[in-house]
Length: 332
Image 1 (cartoon, rainbow, N blue to C red):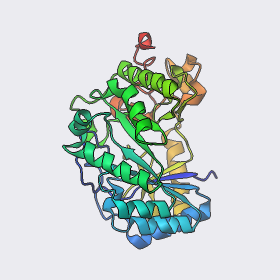
Image 2: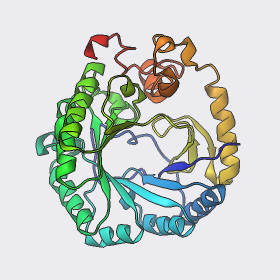
Image 3: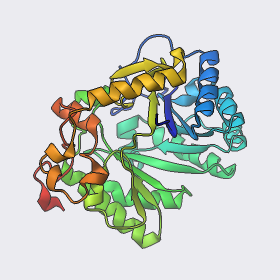
């Protein structure tokens, strides 16, 4: 049986912001894992050989015991990172994160105040930048995440330059997945051509200043991104996504719930693997067009299945944001 190497834990659905494109909003209900349940989960993850616990939300620092759980993970040999909007980071919290040797992913979604505040709310740009300044002061490494939308796709270059200027470790790009609040639309969904334009701008800037960038949840980008400074992540099978209520999900953006860690993590993981294999039994890139003839099909595997399901209602469909799938090869 395979074991997860990375666990993404949505530790709470609570948040101090109401971002227009939030993928967790309106999706979760019921009692969240208690402190003891969360502590037991990380101990069992360690026993399974999990190397990294990525804590997100909601806003993870809205959960009062989150640092206690992170310390437990570290004591059991599991590295910890946090995905945060950055607005709650003060000197006390930065010191705690440094003591944990934790990494921070700060979601900003706009390379200037106007765009960021339009997506995340008035004042979020200034507060997030102040939080990153505090992280840097205490030696906490961080990256900045930009969700690519129709509102900010023209800022790929600026996002890389901003990340380099404020001392981030890398610039992260993630094309919008229409889950949660983002599912209602609002004109935020980017087109395939806009994603290409964004990443081409990022590529140009990364080469120009010698900076790192990465692309999440869009393995199809490997068909047009050429810079070795930009890493395209595949959709890894070694990831366990855990909801605030402890459910193991097919993806943290999809509401397919296989099992629950309250049953015991190892038992829940085994149930999840069986559930996933049955659910995806018919999904094969050899049967997808144009994936069947694509030179990166073995790497991309049809792209983001969450985006395929949310936009096309079919887990077996190719990622509709891929320009080749969308018939926008001219964008390349």
